[in-house]
Length: 330
Image (cartoon, rainbow, N blue to C red; front, side, top):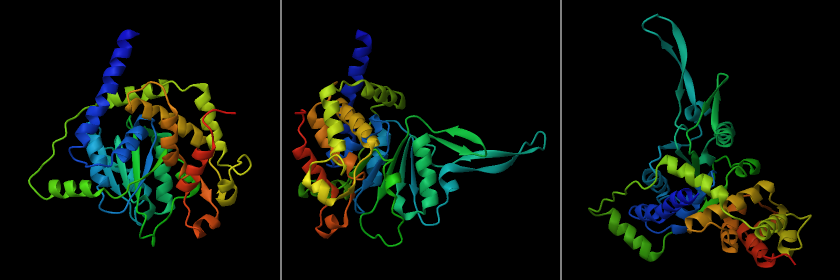
């Protein structure tokens, strides 16, 4: 048992080194990086929203490199078909016998880390094919199942501007994403550093820190992190406070059309445990929950038109829930 604990501690100790290597390429965005790593440790997928030019692709590619994971990028366009993502069968010939047969040719989704770039630019049929693979972690073609690699993480991006010609994800499909991460502009100092590094002779060479097998071990460790019954009760009350039939919060009653489902509670538990791991702890604290409730809930709450009229977003509603729901039940 002691040997096992030592091995786990050695893995946890690698996480600061992991972030240090990523920082050689990516300046700032520490909160976003934490949330992407949390998504991976929790075994889910995330939606990353940010304007063009904020190095989303470079960030995901760098994370895959330092974790020794295979990486593929898929540019979503209006003419993209499910077969372009999942793969397709091609007719092959056995040269020794002359017999012809169909061979499944794996698509770009067969990678540990897949960047689904601008997912809202492709039609619902293609979006649905991707989301099915995310949920089942396998591809079904011609009556056969093909397992996707493990670990498997999809990071889908969408652009908050230029909404013409897009196909917004339905709420039921958005719910499949563990976290909805918002990528903001860098600070002035960070932007200055980016300009210095990317327009000169500096060339980053991040080193590999974790293997795919070690990532799987960290995923298992995440599920073993302690969460006491009081904090589990707190998470339950937070989720139920988003629903009109359960809430006593005025802002929810006024601005929310429908609240979060049970999957939101599962996501918050797993993400809080993953955050504890990356902070070097084996037990969840209230801060883990209060920090991650925003990316967990912002795509799982539907607002009334009154909220849009008053320019209020889901983060505002979540802040009121965090403020008014006590950590300890009365």
